[in-house]
Length: 302
Ligand SMILES: [Zn+2]
Ligand SMILES: [Zn+2]
Image (cartoon, rainbow, N blue to C red):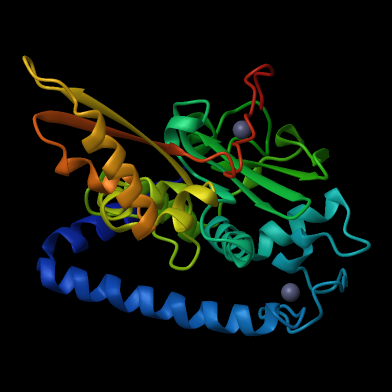
């Protein structure tokens, strides 16, 4: 990794540290607003089958103008065209685009960015699905630092996999996709100061966003049943235990289920009403959530 980029990242971090919290908040709100405005453009074009970046139909492919919409596999796009796309668009741009595409078909469930569902120990592990297409990004620390097994791999890079109808189209091992400078600065800043630097994807939220504690509280307490469980975004299982020396009142429990049904809310959200019990709600990603495509560590140079 080159020192000027590390310096840039260090400068960014000290700049953020020096900011007043309210100014930091304002800056991040502003960048969220910008992303949302860009998402509007994306959506307006996407809904009529066009790409907001190049203005061409999503089904078009011209070697002269590499574009992220190529990842939607227009006729003519071959795996060896990937480097041209990656040269033009950075890792965060590509990820944002695909996240927005995936979220056109339901919130978050087609984006698995849960660290605990990955193979572990990676800086980035993420699988995004849209219809028959599935894209995965993977970056271990050794990829980010660059591993000196070849000329290409010694620079900070990530690995990319694309499947079509579950069949391999691009394999993780096919390319060492170089990060762009802005990617490196962003990733390094987050590595150095994870409490200050968060990578958010407005309108491209994935399961990590859904499963964070604040969202879970909202889901459990306010979520209505059809919204959450039937669409299998998350799975709630509740455990009720009677306090020592007392018993769970069956009638009370039955009434609670009826009440939840009538109100269209989760049972979990009403459990606090039970007398002399303690309850625990376990939340896990639902069955409708895309699984992460593991990148195996078989080959050393992967
Ligand atoms: Zn395009
Ligand atoms: Zn690598």
